Length: 186
Image: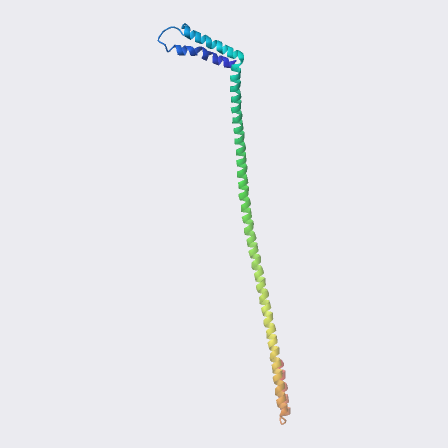
């Protein structure tokens, strides 16, 4: 009904606008051509209105307006969802950055720990090797001392044999050899 109130003055005033352009000062409704055209237009619009043409036009316009409104609502919902997804993605990016920082921090701590363990292990290996070297040196010294003692004992026994083989100085030579043997075994 409101649409009819808006359309009716426009329809009634449209012939006046076209008639005002002429040079005659006759009112628009007094001109027979204009009056007949206006009457035909009014009759056409009444018939079209009775058949539901306005209803179809206005329902088409209403459906188009509803469609546009729905598209606007959908676009706004999509925009809100995109904003939500964007904030979620930003949050995930921040979490990923934090996670990466934690991983790097943990890796640095692990690397320091591994370096400390490797250094301690290396020091332990060096200490073991030094101890083993000292033990080898001690064994070699002991073995060398034993070899020297054996060589001295062999020398003493051979000297004793040579002295004993000399008959004239047996007693003094025997005492001398015993002193040498006891000195070398000390």
